[in-house]
Image (tube, rainbow, N blue to C red; front, side, top):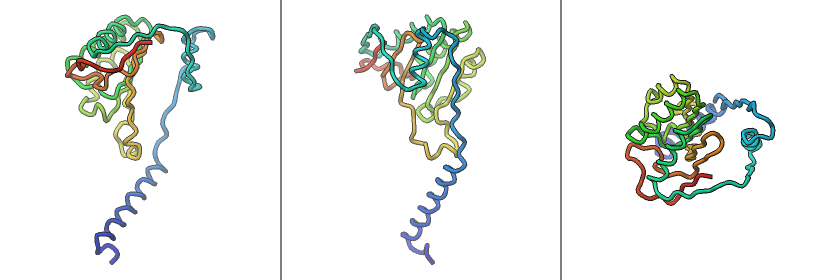
Amino acid sequence: MAFDSLPGLLSGAAVVVVAVLFLLLLFEPGLPYHFTPPQSANDSREFVNFLSAIVNARLFSAGEVQVLNSGVAIYAAELAAIRGAKRSIHLEAYLFLRGRIADEVLGALIERARAGVAVRLVVDRFGSLSTPNRYFSELRAVGGKVYWYQPIAWYTLKRFNNRTHRDILVVDAEVAFVAVPASRITGSGPPPITRRGATP
């Protein structure tokens, strides 16, 4: 028989794996892509930001850049920005792990969503595997939107290693935190020193 030897078994396994991946490719649901055009004027900053995202071209204007080079400073500035949000908060993170820091950030997001601020959170499903979906129930209940990036399911297996390592916070389309600490929102709190972190 063809599978009596180890090479034959490996060949058979390889054929099965390729066949499964091919079937996943054929029957995988498409990725949803929706956007809502802003109601602001065409010469507003909000519209420029929207257009920049849609055409995938960065548009720059003169602005203030502040380098934050400690984890403590970054988290303090992020929390202050979240708590001061008037219109919108967009947060994307690879790690959002339960604990003191995560509870504080989540509490601030809930408070702002309850006040009518549009809160949208994207969390990587693999990076935050230990965080249950129910952890965000209260945020959803007050109107916040929570999305899992690449949820683990049979139809996402071929993209299993496609993770979001973006750590971005944008508040009111005016203040942004980029390249924040790799530990992101974790129960252990911020690291004492990080080499990156800025608010343009």
